[in-house]
Each structure stands twice: as structure tokens, then as C-alpha cells.
Length: 217
Image (cartoon, rainbow, N blue to C red):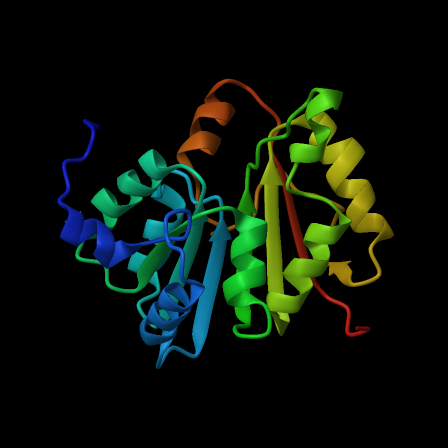
């Protein structure tokens, strides 16, 4: 697909720019307007080029979908897909996920589902501090999930799945696994990202996790 050519008005219709907004109240107020009237809301952290979240929005008109994306180029591709399909139940926040959750979501919204699809594993030890997935991150997810909400996560990196994500989940007292096994290679009717399509074609293993809250906090 060629690079989308979208004017600024359309971009503003779909994207809230946290990186370049000095007043948090502007985004907080706009989020409140957009989510008003929706009982069901889902969040994708790292929405990439939008294939996954746009398909969810198309097939679930009764829900509102919020995406967080660090790359403006990727966010624009999501807007292109959403605008082309006249999707109204979708917003992308351009910003850093941990900061977005703390500033705009915690103690304000509770999500039915939160998705973390194929985060950067940062395999080198010197870059390990950049990994989004850790115990502190799980605590933040816990606070924004509904009591019966589900946190889905996926990776194609063997080490990330087996040495980092799965051990953290197994040690967690605030989440419980809802799958038949600790992880699955596929979840029925989950949807698919463009990245997953490419990695499956390349022969990579895919690891899916799904967890609900333990009511202890």
C-alpha cells in the first residue's frame, strides 16, 4: 500500500497527539467526549499500522477502541485504514504507553480487553530496560481492566516468551491464566496483525497469553 495522503483535519479526527500537547486536560477532555456513551471499550498498546484494531472496530460497532502508538508514521497508516472504512469508534493516542496509562486512563477508565501484540523484545541485555513488559507494567494493566476483563499478549520471540513473559505471569499474584496451557500458538477468533502474518510466513513460533484479574488488590 502506498503511503497515505491524509489532511490534518482527518488526522485530528482520529489521532490525539500526547507528544506535542502541553496541556494534558486537552486530551483528557477529548477522550471523555469520544468515549461517552460506550459501555464497552478495548485498548491496544502498540497498534502499529492498524490492521488488528481497525478490524476489531469494524466488527464491533457497539465498542469503542483506543490504540496507543509511539510511531506517528504507523498511526497515520491506521488513520488511512479507518477513514477509508468510515470508522467512528476508534482513536489512536500518539505517545508513550506507560505515560498515557498514568495520565489519562488509570482511575478514569476500565477496559473489557487490553491487547499487547508483539512488543519489541529488545533482546540485547543493554537494552533490557526498554522492554515494556515487566511486573510494573502488569500492575498498570491491572488498574485499567474491568473485573472480568482480559489482558492478551503475544510475541514471536522465543526468549521473550519463555524467559521473560511466561515467568512473570507465573509469578504474578494479580493475574490468572485462562488458557488450557500457559501459552497457545493461536487463539480462535483473535484477529491478526500484519507483523504476525509476516512472522508466520517466515516460520517463527507465535506465543499467545491470556489472563484475567485475581481480585486481591
